[in-house]
Length: 280
Image (cartoon, rainbow, N blue to C red; front, side, top):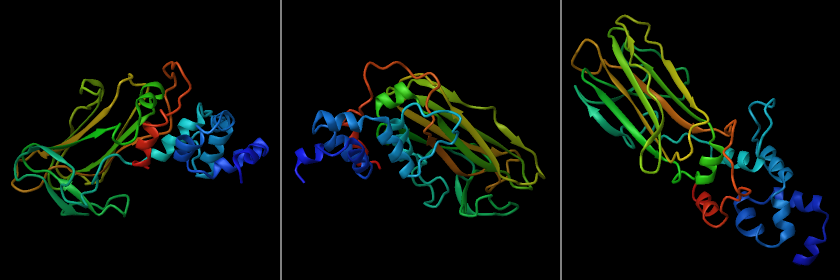
């Protein structure tokens, strides 16, 4: 069908056609074709339809979606940004900041004097020793597909989760530190609770630690995640806290007070959407 005849179709039909076109192709190839296509592709209805068609539903319908295009792309990008969170690849992807005592080790659940993990899909955990063991990952948000305007104007919530447990027969202390940092690694927001102590002869249950960064300052480009600990009896071996199933997730929920922007977000069609091709 020639381009001229396509433009003679009712706008409702064109919108329906566009709902079946991949989002990246809409912005890279379709939107620049003509002003009619550009205007239709910028219509809220299109991105709401694409979101619902993909199963992207707001978690809280009481809060209206401020921008369905942004909501769609945030849902498309949503995933755990930490690699190897459950020790399936031994220590791969983790930087060992402190490797004291008998060093970090990977064990299978439930482990000696341990309990099963709440999620049966999790099979392994990292375990610490009698001197401080800390490991970390640094997430580059731009490399993960999040463009600057999205991060600075809409500032989506960033949810950090970790799980830890002690052995029944040994006390321990658990540490976690998460920082949002700028491009030049200036810390803009931080979550670092006091070390969590677990006494000897505890129930060895797994404890979830979770924190949500909301309405943080503009300029966030990196996330540092660090956790670990040590046992409190200085026993040779691996008696310190066990950690697994860690996650960093950028959610579709955006800042309650978005920063002002001078233009309608267009994802910087050529550069940012090309980056999304390699991310999604």
